[in-house]
Length: 244
Image (cartoon, rainbow, N blue to C red; front, side):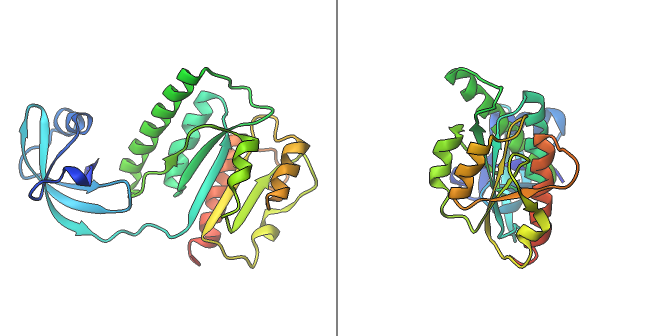
């Protein structure tokens, strides 16, 4: 069934008009017509079934017919990801959405090699948010992850006191195996800190440790930054979503 993102505030008398972009996909790509059944979601955890009622001025109207119970996990994971090369960032974001990430916080670290103007960062954020939306439409997520404004690593660490668990995989300092760090723990609100190509510096790891982070190893192999992100998201989902 085709899925479309809607703004609940635009529903009038049980009918919602899809956005211009969503209508284009529905009409020109999927060839939907009156009577076709679709699924709608608001990006905040709610989803609905709907029936196409018609088209006007290249905008599709849908009758919202039923609220569908959400199966969203109660586990919240924030992925604080050092900005990496564009093609790798754009590989990581949709996969992170599939793995149920709640927030993606792009970071600028000491060894970050991607440096852009303020205007180009704004453009990147817009593109990343579109990628996240499209991924959620495809994989069935009802909550679109928040992709936060880019922040400096040191500044971000000043606001991490609300997490139950903070992990920082790194080779820069002595660490402990991941399975030991999460064994016998329970969490509903985890933070994962992922460094850039070249890893965090020892000073950056020390700052994270002062904020409560645990330095962990992800095994004997050296993983790319985006691979480490997805590995940790998958492990945390497996370990905690059943207990959350």
